[in-house]
Length: 66
Image 1: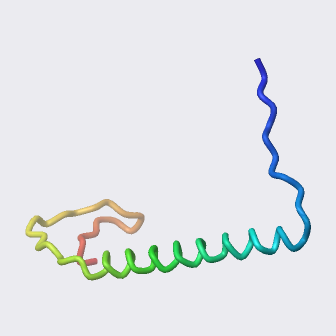
Image 2: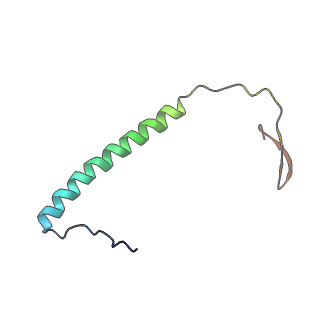
Image 3: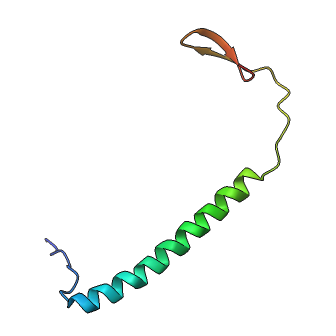
């Protein structure tokens, strides 16, 4: 059983422009929301790391402070 791909309708340039403007408003809102979430993430409190972690890197051992 094969399904045919549904394609969007073909519209006039004016209708396309209107649809594009509506989408652009949503894209800008998404960008603002993503930026706000990223800013909130940067304001998250920190947690003290008391364990001395040591990692093996390309130049030998390294700690979190390195």
